[in-house]
Image (cartoon, rainbow, N blue to C red):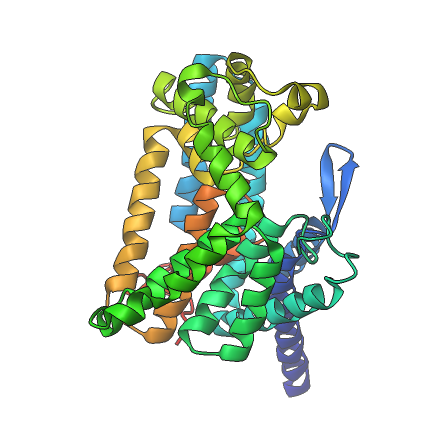
Amino acid sequence: MGLNRSIKIKNKFSLNSYIEFTSVLMIFLQGFVIFGVFIIDLRLFYIFLIVNSVLLYSIYGIRLHKYLFGLIFFLIVHAIVVNTYYGIPWSYFIKQTIGISIVAIYFYNVFVLCDMKKMFKLYLKLAIVFCVIAIIFYPTGLLDKEFSRMDGLMTEPSKFIIINVPALYYFLNKKKFIQSFILLLGFILAQSSIGFIAIFIMLLFLFIRKSTLKYVGLTILPFFFLIPYLQTNENFQLRYNQTIENLNVFETKSFDENTNLSSFILLKSAYISINNFIDHPLGTGIGSFAYQHDVYIKDLKVSRYFEASGLKNLNREDANSMFFRILSDFGLFGLLAIIVFLFLGILVFVKDFDSEKKTVCTGILIYFLLKLLRMGHYFPEEMFFFLFMFLFNLPKITLKLNENEPAKLIK
């Protein structure tokens, strides 16, 4: 009897360790994908998700928090109502709702059952490991899509950046200089504008605090190094200047012939999202940006190259920005949700509570600030991992398995 119990406990421990490790590993698997398989791109992330879900649910069962259930219910009802009213095919919201439900429910169960503190430490270690690998192979260009810009095992530099933002902030905040240097070097080699914006935001959070505000020089010193660097960085300046030059697209509905692709996608998505919000203030349903894209893109005059190559439809599915996609899909509902989340994040930053939790939450808040600027995919590999890491660390918030069993928190 005792032997059987010992084996059962050992097996559960082994399963928990496997789930903890692979759940963290999954968020770094964005670049492992076979494109165009059946109706979806076959990602290694999906394979782990399916296998782990079967293992997890077969032993522990499925837990679904009432707020998570309420969110999924709202997504479905809102989409059905507005899709029906505006004549948008249901296929757009069905695909998104299924994806969000599967990923969100999985990571919720992981955070409820596993050691969250251990998972975050593992995330920090893997961030360094994958960054070191990317730096080692950078001179060869074997892992990168562009020879001069590092993306490591991701599909583009900006995705390499965003996955490592909470880790870099944590190391900077804890004065872990070696780890900070490694990730900072990775950010610089990535040559992504979102990376420079990330560093700028981190410096704001790190230096604009009670302990450093009285030292004005200390507060502004980092910016004397960052700003001159950006002024001489060709990639950043090209995107910045051409974005500013094409801001009049909202009036002229026309892009310059030499507009770079990044500026074009950003401003195109902004035009479509804002106009859809004005025309449909309550949104057009989750996933509908792709449908509305095809409606509003007809109003815009784009460069002949983008037109001929089909690049004018790039990021049609995700708006290349979580803010623009949420604004278009949910209208005022989405805008209110963003405001509430940002208010909650800022409140966490200014509130005095556990230093470890505060550092984790602030780093993840910066991640979501960047997500609002870039990458509008609703269920990427890392997002729900970071979302639940953020929520489970909030002070005075208790997520429960049921009415009597609270979820674990980092201590």
